[in-house]
Amino acid sequence: MQWPQGLRSLKLGYHWNQPVDRLQLPDSLTELDLEGCKRPLSWAHPPQGVTALGLSNSWDQPASQLRLPPALTAFNFPYEFNQPLDDLRLPAGLRSLSLNHAMQHPLSALCMPAGLTALDLSNYGGSLAGVRWPPSLTKLTAGSRCGAAGVLPDSLAELRLCNDPLPDFDRKWLLPLGHICLPSRLQRLAFDVPSGSALGDLRLPASLTALEMHGESDRPLGDWTPPEGLRELAIEGTWNRPVGGLRLPPRLEVLILGDRFNQPVAELDLSPSLTDLRLGCHHGAAFVQPISELHLPPSLRVLRLPSFGRNADVFRRPCSYSCAPPAALPPSLRELRVHPDAVRCDRLSEWDLPPRCVVNTAV
Image (cartoon, rainbow, N blue to C red):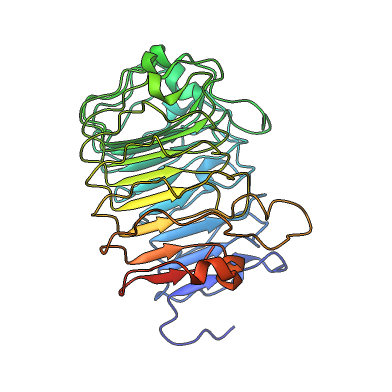
């Protein structure tokens, strides 16, 4: 097969049925996606300059047959790969690694490169006992087994604690929040809140600047005080609790009350530094609260409004901005994000938008 000169990216799709080892792959490749390759990889001379590699989901050969290019910086294990990791040699320059759902072998057997910075264990179903965390690891995504494993690396700057591995779709984070020992230098945290948990039980480090919460707590948000250093706060998932009394951090810049949120916003005391406010689900869920009494800060630049509960059924009826607009839109506003149907609504045309503000209907 003749490849275009200087080819840098190649993807073999699901209908590819030829052995890869018979192909003379060009040395110019830097991205190689072999999702259609269903045979063992046995290249005599793999492209040495490949930095991003993807393999077929059905690939499940011994780790010793997995010959990874020395220039590789990002690698995702194949979906069905479930082989002992003792013989796997990862390139020294690898920076990002993702494990899969089928993998059940202990991660402690894997020698991860010292320079690894991002590790995704969200679908990993094996044991984390005795894992040797790379000293440079700054980003970790994991299920609840990670928290049960004990000490997390103190080098982490970003941590995402998500649902248990597949196929338990309905299982949420099961570990009590008070049992999670978070790294002292953590800056970004995202996690699922267990049902019945009190947010006050979670010991958040003072270094935290971004917090994203999913799930549902049984207590009003006013009973919880976010860390003062937060710049970004997202409350999503099935959250739908009153916001009255919620003490927002003084330097908060981004506030997202999304998905199922449907509570009065008149009592929402917005931070004067806020630049981005997003209310409700943009795809037309349940928000039916008036926004006329919402007091917007003078620094606001982006305002996302939901479809006010008129676009949630299967017939996709046009939404209606029958609610009066906020008392005053700040002159700093540069972008108003609304549902596409709202642009055709007469009431939206009555809004007194600042001169430099544009209406964005991207969903």
